[in-house]
Length: 288
Image (tube, one colour):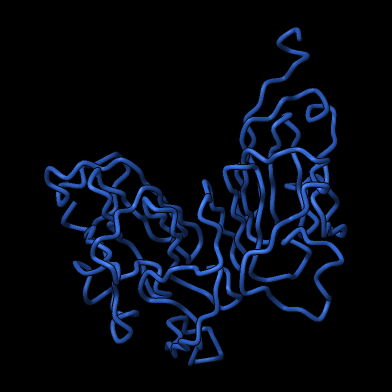
């Protein structure tokens, strides 16, 4: 699609030519593509650095330089030998894992949700005429940056608006970023005075009744996980999407209870701004 016009039917992204895509990850307004050769392509809106290839002075030029933003183009890594095997994206952040297990992050990092501190402060002009504050300051990584304290055996990353979960191959969950609403799942080990954590911290397996976690998800202000025995856990800002009333925040993973959940063996979970979706096998309906 080179005309960048809206379409209500699927259209071929012809700018990719013969490039073979093996994975796709989508954020709020941007998309990552993984090629068969282990390269990352990005396109979409990139004002918070989430494309990983837009220079600072052009972050807000999407309307005048649509080709730069809206045509899939390669994301360059500082080490040209890096080969990427997995990609993840959500909201205004992007992640990639190299074949040797290193995790790279780029995009919005105002609460260290990329898994490390960022010193880069960027001033942006407000594009909203109704916004009283004409200058906005964001903290972002504009290029892929290695997360130095991320375990090397990560198999899945989930990203909320201001926090991140990571799951390793042993079923251990890690969290970092904004601590508000208890969405990091670390309970009383995080002080109410702490605003954020700048590196991944493990969530105790005791919080999941000693079970290994097999799948994770982040909503804007909450977190969810599925364990090896098919249980669904939720924590963070109180809402129907984690199985609580709106006023009841949870600062540790808590089993989601209910008529259906009690008889379902869950397999995976995903979460949006104000809703969650789960896949599972209802043992009652299936006669087991």
